[in-house]
Length: 447
Image (cartoon, rainbow, N blue to C red; front, side, top):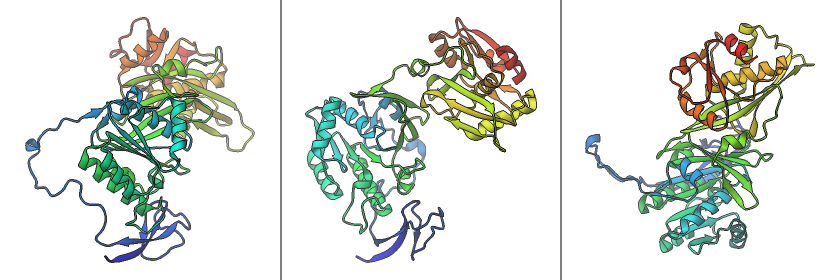
């Protein structure tokens, strides 16, 4: 078999026939490593040869799903593990990826054998974690191995219901002459595991390391190979963990699962809104509650703002959990349309509880929190704020206001400031709906 030598960037996957000090693609230095590749090798087409047919003649297939017994995990997956799917789970070290999978596979193993491949820990270490988590099902098999060929041999012999590989960066195949975790090794191992999943119908879950910027380590092609990409997020200072889907061929990418890290492992949070608001300060300016939609789930979260005089030539604009550029835009609207002198103020905006807001429905809440801190006026704690803010200072309608209001009613909120265009669509018992068309109207109602 013929071979050829290429130099591959360990950061982005760029390949060059000669060594370069700086990668032309991602501009990183000293990341190109020598790798020997075999011509004619690689991963075969998992779909096999086919002929074009009309879409109406394609036979329908029922997606068989395996419930893991952890409803928050199943929610993010789209209803459970799909037979033959390849799932990639990424997250910071120590965030709880292995803990979540060990708990989920223990419950799945009660209905059939499950193989947990540990490439970073010994079987004894995995058992110690399993005893702490209560994961002691006799159908859960532990394999401490990093050779892909040996792993595939055990899978064919055991015929498990599901397979977990923790982690894909520790696994290597003898067909590629490079170190485990390199671009070629990760690509080749993931490709062969994909063939296994599609050919046998066994769902395979891969744990992936992340880089400093939070993306999956290795080439981005790994995210294109798999069917589902999940990110496990959380702050070391908070016990809450959020499982978020960024790619899912079998379900929505907007769903999230909320967990709480305890001594006994990860516990599901059935009512995240109540938990996020449990430590909300009473009588403090700069605090407001907004409603956001994560997939089909409405969540109430607290936005906190702090506005103080700046001693710097360029005042700071710092955000946690919300886009920095969005805050700059909203502050500019406050200055231009309302007349607040915020040019010499440091502004800090935080989403309490470690949540991350991306939808524009939180705009009015962010503006209200900043204005409350600047004016040092307290917003009524029983009032929720909802709406998108435009550059002209108008308050625009939001999607599905009724779902958000129902969640607010369950937690005892009695008043909601929302766009006038959303009042017609909203129906809520026990909540006073105050429709506003502009930013000036909203602030007049709040203060």
